[in-house]
Amino acid sequence: MSDSLRFVAVAQTDPLAEPLLAELAVEYAQRYGGSEAGVSAWLRGHPAADFAAPHGALLIGLLGGRPVTGGAFQRFDDETAELKRIWTASGYRQRGYAKALLVELEAMIAGRGYRRIYLTTGDRQPEAEALYESAGYSRLVEPLPAEGDIFPIAFEKMVSGQPETAEPFVG
Image (cartoon, rainbow, N blue to C red; front, side):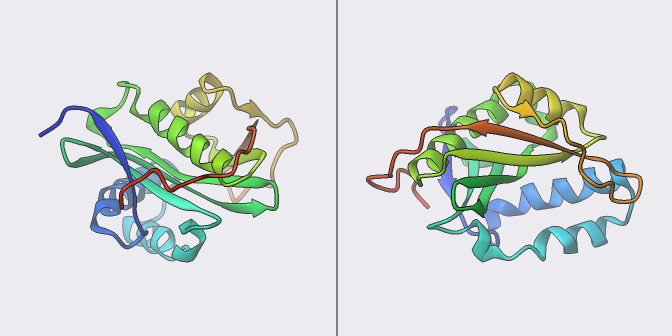
């Protein structure tokens, strides 16, 4: 087994995406309330086609064949991709894997011709806020509407889009 992180593009229903969805369901339920089953259904209910080429992708970072980080993007508008489901397994955090994931996603987004990246995170995820700020994302000042007692926080980053010549990921 290799100890280097490698990324693969997968479908939302791929078994490699399962740890991402399962741990996000637990974490979101703990941080924001609701049942794990309800959050899981919400995550899995997202249209899988949104995370598929040509407008989106879902990447899983593998370490020795084990999924340790992952995330997706989808089309927000003609010039903007929206990041979704950014995750690193709890036992693998603070090792730079999330930043490596962002670099991969950003390169793919730029390669698809997008000029801007947009994302939202919740106000109960200070680690996510710190990650995005450290990766050069700017927090948008205009507040988003609250969803109950949850306050979404938006970020953006500009990228220079260059058309992809070939799909660099093995799926």
